[in-house]
Length: 115
Image (cartoon, rainbow, N blue to C red; front, side, top):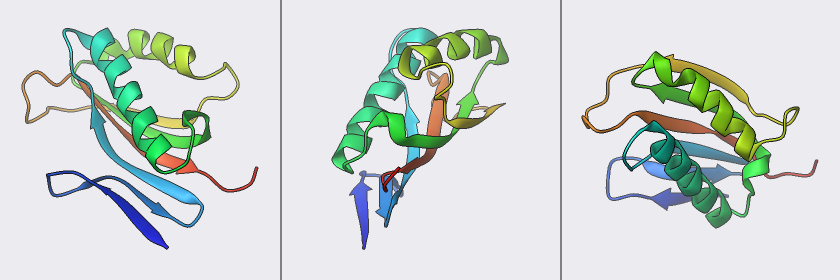
């Protein structure tokens, strides 16, 4: 069965298919990078919860940064959400965003099957 978490835009926040949840972009809002990454994680948790999956089951993420200088802060914040040896696989890159105030976006894949 395939279930979608729709948005008003041309993508879904998530699509669950079998044991997997495929996350669409989650961008953060707020003043500054730290506020935005925490907001993005809050949104990820909400979306995953809608799909019956906790954040800890996130197995792969792509993080898109506007400024590579935010990488050390991103590393620090990830350890606020994941234990040292329990982080998802990750690819981090830099890009420009359509929204001028956007400093990062995250997408990924979660596994909600049996461990």
